Image 1: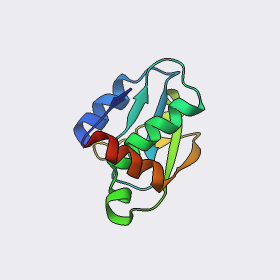
Image 2: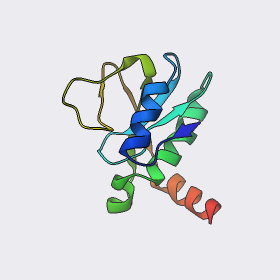
Image 3: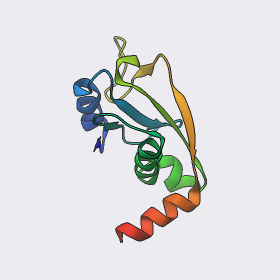
Length: 110
């Protein structure tokens, strides 16, 4: 998995993402984009979602469950005038990342 840390690295990550790979971002603005390299199952997507949620503005502000969108890289588009780090998505699925899993991850990385 690769992840951005700001709008510039998110921009780079999305530009280089391979069409069939899964990309994740929170429903709310202000999170890293992450790309899962290779085939991803539901567990992989959820675990990557925990990582993205942990570093999101949504988690920092609310400390509640975080809704994560995930999609194939091929479904991402950029229109003229969109700021750096901002993208549109044609088809997205959602998964709710539970606050207890984010808290557990925080404990593990300390």
